[in-house]
Length: 145
Image (tube, one colour):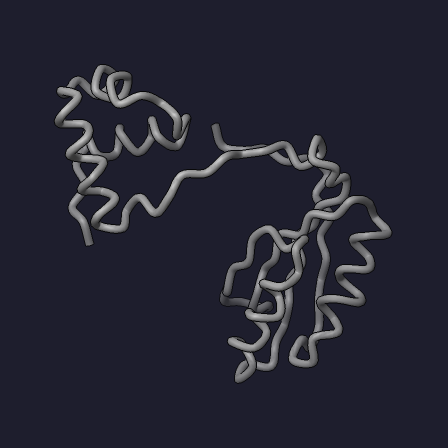
């Protein structure tokens, strides 16, 4: 595991805020040279701390007017098979294997309530190793800025 100091953490904060920020702006913000910022970002990337860059989008503006967390209870030996099947459902935006009352939590984005119902009842519950589901609707998303 990479040892991170305060400068590394500040760099990561800047990249989380805006992954398109320039190397010069990062260097100025964290008070190091541009070359130093570049070297640190390369080290963080090589160490696997930085795994990629992404774009945050507004799901409603993309046409996803119904979002939900869907919790799944699974037959344990089938986890790998279930994971592969869930990854083929395009509306599943995020998947996490968790401990507790459920085994998996999904973030599902759908065009509307009818589409969400179809995804849960026809796509997810059709997977033979899914023992039960619980769906919690999302009324409003609050992203981390």
